[in-house]
Image (cartoon, rainbow, N blue to C red; front, side, top):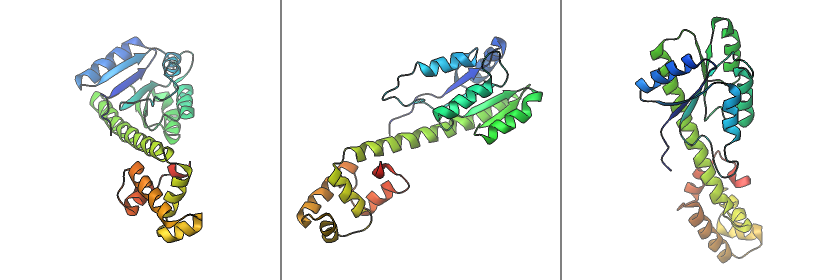
Length: 218
């Protein structure tokens, strides 16, 4: 597994004084941050990311997002993040005024990580940020593991994939040969290649690797 980069906290709030205060607070706990004065600016950053071959975020990340802003609201940006499938790797913590609490609670039910009411406790906020970053790190690792597994399965030939699916069902070579109408020796060759490409040493290890993942069927 490749090492993850340093965690990053994204700040989206239209008030510069709030962004500066949050940035200072996070630095005091040795956390990096990047501020955006509007939801539109943050979305523009997302739009500018390379489309092919790059999983974002690559480092544990979370987003501190103001609910009410001129232009695109925090809730509208949150909906865009849902559409992009980013809520696991980029947990969202809403910053809310008292009147926005019901709205923030509804957003949590939609998948937001949490909400913090202004004025907030500095330590409590950073504690929530650190928990969100830990969730992000776990989600990124799971995403990368799944991607690596999908790549291995993608490297199999069609016949190797057919053999693999029968191997994980527990069929012996003779039955696999009969089912695919090939020789037992051919099954043995394909089986050995599958184990090599999937980097496993046994049918049990292969089955464990694929359990709970649909990469073999993609």
